[in-house]
Length: 250
Image 1: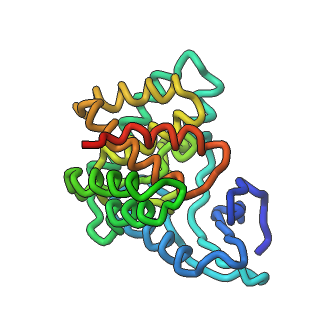
Image 2: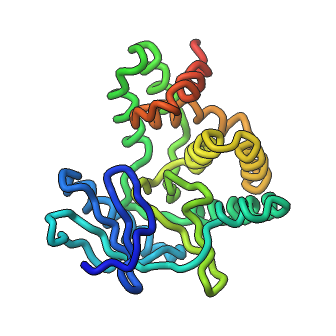
C-alpha cells in the first residue's frame, strides 16, 4: 500500500489517501468482526441511495492490519466551513439538519437495531449503579420503535462538500436503524461537547424542521449519554454523568 497522505488519525485506526481511494487501516488487534460489520453497514447504507463513499473492498495490509477501502472524496467539511465563515453558521446548520432528515427518510432493514445496541451498552455500564441502569433500560424500552436509518455519529466533520459542489456523508461505523430522535439526541450531545451554543442552535433547528417536540428529543439524552459513557473518555465523563441525573424516578 503506497499512501499519498494521512487524512486522519483516530482511536484504533488511521485513514490514508491512496490515489482516488481511502484506506481505513485498523490496529493489529482490532476485532475482525467489527471491521467486517462496519464495511457491511456502509454497503447497506449505500444501497439506500444516500450520497456516501462507496465501499470497494476489505483487505489485510502487508503488516497484517485489516483495512476498508472506499472512495476518496476531495472537498471541505461542514465543520471547516462553519469555522471559516462564522457569519454563515446558521445557514450551514440548516443544511446539516436537512441532510440528517434525508438520512432519516431512508430504511435499511438489515442494519442492526439501535435499541439492541444501546440496551447492551447500558447493561454493561458499571460506572453507574444498578438502579440507574434499570431506569435507563426501562425508559429505552418504553420509547417508540422506528426503523429509520440512523448515522449514530452525525456531526459537521462527517459531512463533506465535494469539488463538484455536492455533499457526501462520511463514517458509517455506528449506523443502525431506529428512532430519529435518538440520532438527534446523539448529535446534540456531540455538539455540546464541542460548543454548547452550536448545540442549542442545532436542537432548535432540528425540532423546527422535523416538527418534533424538544421534550421528546430530550427524553433520549440520558440514554445516549449512558451509551457514550461506555467509551470511557475522561474529558467527557463529568458532562455525561450530569446528563444521567435527568432520569425521572417514578
